[in-house]
Amino acid sequence: MSSMKRTFGAALAIALAAACGGGNSATPAVPTCDAACQDAIAIRSLRETLKLAFNLTLQGKPVGHHDESVDCPLGGSVHVVGDATSNPAQGATNVDLVYELLGCTYTLKDDDPKQTYSMSLVGKVEQKGVIAVQPSATTALGFRSGSVSFRGSVYNPAISYEQAACAVVLQQDGNKLTGTLCGRSGTVDL
Image 1: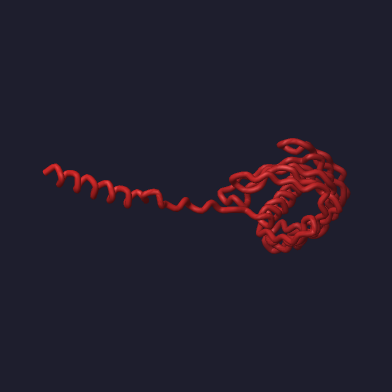
Image 2: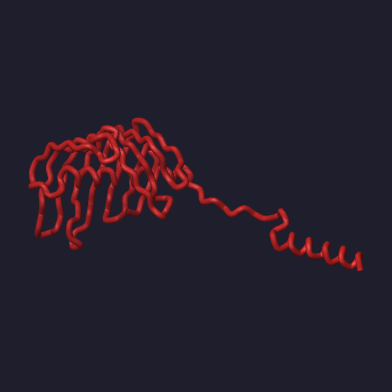
């Protein structure tokens, strides 16, 4: 009987080891974010920070020339200068603005790790084009800067991200943003 117990015990141990993976278990793949992915998130952070700055300084103000400054909610400030005119018939706002970002910090946490960031921005960015206010209009904006510095993190889990004095040329058509960041191509669906 004792040899039967030993055989049963050995069989049970083998069965348990096989059921539990027995040391040959593969670790689940962790999603990664390469350099292109990181740049795309940085582009998103710039666009969304400019949108925040517009809303904090010009939203609800009369049309015309503006020269507004405001503290950013998470640190730093932004100075916005330029013209914003409204076209109620088209449901659109035409803009010709310059944003001076002075360490303006914005954070977004999302279920999608590719839409998660915490970024502080320094530099001047020109914005020209049309912002859709009504569904009958389409946003068509151009963004240009000779030098924007990015400092913070992108993705989840967070990856440190820093680019100093980076040229930016972006075009938004509807919900698609394409262009270059530091000479590298990038595309973001907003």
